Image (cartoon, rainbow over all chains, first blue to last red; front, side, top):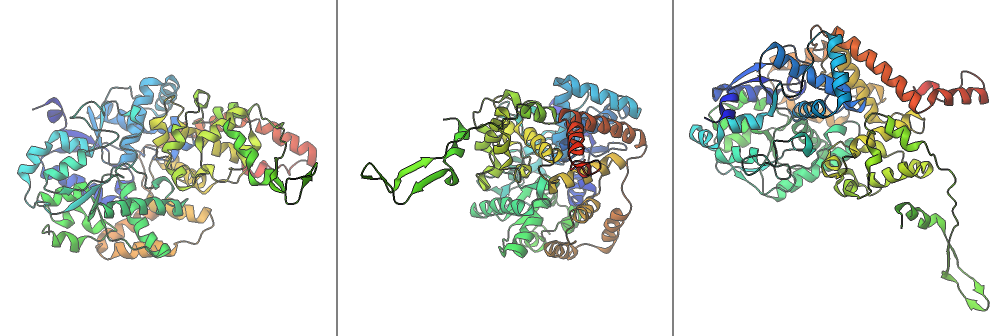
Length: 311
Length: 264
């Protein structure tokens, strides 16, 4: 077993606010997938919001503190060395806090001040490693083992893998990426492609893997978001995909919401399904659609998964 | 040619005389085109420092004008007037009136981080866009953008309770921006969701909008962050000289009716 494989068997789990609300399907499917694969998740005790894409606009240092508190609890109160965040926003913010606390004295000072006034130990850079749900499955299980465990192959399912913005940008906060063939790429990420291919899916050549869905302005500038989402959906359909696989609740929610908004406001109807990669992998491993929260998606794909022999 | 000089050849600055003869030579139409003389005398020398002092704007001074940010920009692809490189140039040159022409679109940055990803000078153009949007609001050039209203609601909830609940944020946003809730497309979305949702889960989701989720023992963090935010707001006001502006306005038009009062 590699170091990572051993290390990721049990990780601290940081679901974040979205996964308790609009992204609950992602929460349910991540837990179900972990259980099915024999991986352990210990939810971070009494966690708080990471600040998402909003608090940084008041001041990035407040966001750094918010993220640092989550990592501090995982390290200092739970004794964990790895935090797994399935949400791109949470993952990005924890990574960004790690970077700022390693490189920026002012951020360290503000974090120490707020931590001490809040009555908890300040997080110090390097105490935990933050990983995404994709890293978790990829390194703790890997493609080979995953392929062996597949019960219902995703064979014949054409998938466009959509990673969004926060998983790869900006590159400097992800020092472990772009480090050779086994690492993730910031320009052409492939971890989700790899895992779904191991489950039998046919990944289409999709140029907009890391395009922006306008998630930050989904309500405050809805027309822009609808246009950006339509670009993504149409590119995926043009590439021959039936499904867009997602790995972020904001992207997932944005695609679903603006797919409907495009139809009701612009009269443009598209048919592509939007499904979390954890839902697809879960069903491939034999979990029932409801066990992976397919009923909690806005995008209705029950008929589709039945047709593909997954239900 | 420095990029701001594009402004010299805007249609409104070009003058053409349909019928014109000079020394017996017919120079009608485009032969008589001349560009209106322009003297820039409204430089705001403090502009870069002011925007650089707001959170996010810290590294604006590093810019070398390579244009990678605009080249990579998501919003620029939809609207060519959205031009981070140009705005950074104007800010550093102090060309405030030219910047104000675009005041109503600068907030539209979607924070996709493509600019920060490609910037060879670590300017963090995304942060500069946010700082510029805030500068416009704090100075009273624009009302709070829908994006800032959303950030405020979101941040208030996080600071107060440690967590947010999507439904509450959304409802508050529609209320504070004076929009009808829910918009018709949202009704369509909810209908789509209701097709498959069991009643138990629905009740749970409904309850979440009524009873806010909380991080327990958050009150000390709340107080610490609120104290920090108050200091931050004070620093921002000072950097932009807002208190002097209010005083000057009061002296001019009498106390209590300064334009900045309602905005801060």
